[in-house]
Length: 175
Length: 192
Image (cartoon, rainbow over the protein chains, first blue to last red):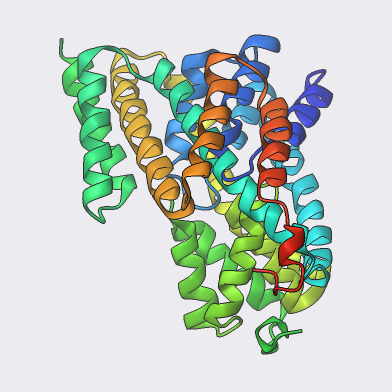
C-alpha cells in the first residue's frame, strides 16, 4: 500500500514520455521500476513488456501486470489510471486547442520535428529491450526470424510470439 | 472548420463504449490503428478517411499512446468529455484485465523452468517485433536526410550517454523543432 503514491507518479510520468509509442519510454520505465524502486527484476519487466506487445488494446496494457505485481488489484487499478488519466486529459485539451491552431506555422514544425526524435526513441527502446531479452544464440535466431517475417509478410505478430514461446521451450527447456 | 471535423452522425455513449470495447478486446498482436480505422470509418461512419488521418497525425505528436489518444479525440468529437472517457475506458479495459491476470499467474508459476524457457522465446520474439515496428515507422516518417541526424542524436542520448528519455525528448525535440521552424521567406505560403 505504501507503494501507491510512487506507483502513481512513476506511471503518470512515464506516460508523458510515450511520444511515438510505449517503446520510447521503455528505458525510463526500466530505470524507475527496476533500478530505482526495485519493484521487479529487469527480466520480469521484459517478460511483461514482451507479452504486452501482443495483448489487445493500446500496447502498454502491461502496466496492469506491473501494478498487480507490486500491489495486487489496487496496484493494477492505480497504475492504469495513472498511466492513461493524465495523458488522456492532456490529449483532450490539446486536441481542442490543436484544431484552433490550424494555420499556426509552428504546429507543422512541431509535428515535423518530433517525428524523427520519436523514431530515435523507438530505436533506443529496442536496444534496451534487446540488451536484456537476447540470451545466447537461440534468442538471436528467434528475434531475427521474427524481424524478417514481419517486414516481409503480413503475418499477425501474436502468432509469431506464440511460435517464439514454443521455440523457447525447445531451445531453453529441453537442453 | 473543414467538413471532416464536424461531428458527422449521432452516436450514443453506449455505442461509443461498445465500439471501443470491441477494438480493445480483438486487436491481438498490435496494429490497433487498422482496427480503429475499420471500425470508425468503415463500420460506423463516425469519421471519413481525411478526418481519421488528421486525428491520427495529432495523436502521434501528443504524449500518450497513439491508440489511447485516438480514443480520446474521437470520443470527444462524438460526445464531448464523456464520450472521450467511455472510449478510452473501452479500449483499455480488456487488455488491462488480461494483463492483470498475466501478472497474477506469473507470480504463482513464473519461476517454473518451462515457463522461464517459454518466456526466453517470447522475449526474443518481442525484440524482433519491436525492431520491425521501429523500422516500419522509420521508413514511413523519415523523409529527409536531416531527419537521420535527429534519430541518431536521440539514440546516442539514451543508449550511449544514458540520459533520461525526458532530457533527450526536450533537448533533441527542441533542436529538431527549431531546425524545421517556419521560415520568414515562406510567410505568405500556406502552412503545410
